[in-house]
Length: 351
Image 1 (cartoon, one colour):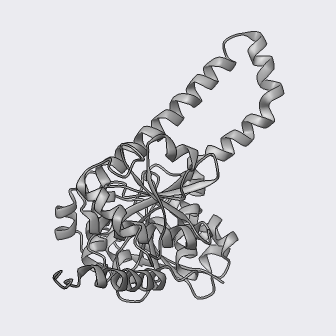
Image 2: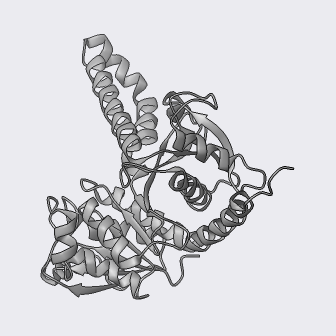
């Protein structure tokens, strides 16, 4: 199903680029053998790496540029001065129809700014949102926004719900994902006006969204819903808190098994179970934040990711393309617009 998909790669983005990018593409090629890769970056560094991977080299093209967006570059500066950077050229390839998706492990703010400028936003979407998925007690869930929009109104939250619903269906393969709005309580009267107004619209008869209602922080890891909708300020804090807690738990676990000789023997007997645990919570499995709402598929890999994590980010991009993500977003926007029209129509005055 990946036949004909072309992936533009920012070969110089990320802490371990370009080695990590090339090796990641090689791993992804094992899952998607018909995908074509276009690497944007320093030819002198890329060609020797590709020479060691002849199978990948047959499916790859290199576009040379010496310019790179640094990790500390301000988005506005990168947008203004980075027109020939590896990141911008990869994004432009999608905008010009030369590639289907772009994947980068570079500067997040710069990638968002360039994607919004070059790819524009989809009709009916006011603001793009950053989304990603992570493990829960029930499986996996999607959360958005993760930091692109600090403040959001009801329209933004409803659009996020739509985009999260489509993302869950196209990437996670869920037929009817449940959607919840993160709030300070599950009661209908809780929260500020924006979340209550968004919830009211999502509860409307005929809504294309399977809306669960409000959820609280502890519902995130429980997997109460498949899609968690929130503003970027709250979402960013929530996901960073979850990541920090996971690291703390891992450190506590290691310390416990090092505590005594008996504990070390216990580790030997528990090794297989701990291996399964590591695989289940391995952040590389969930690498690949997506800029939803722009007029193209743009996936952000974690800057410190290794080759396996980057390969998974490429996999997210391919899944979105082959499952028609953008077309489904357009259909969903049309359905929401039809639902909203009667609500906006002036009602006749009561006699």
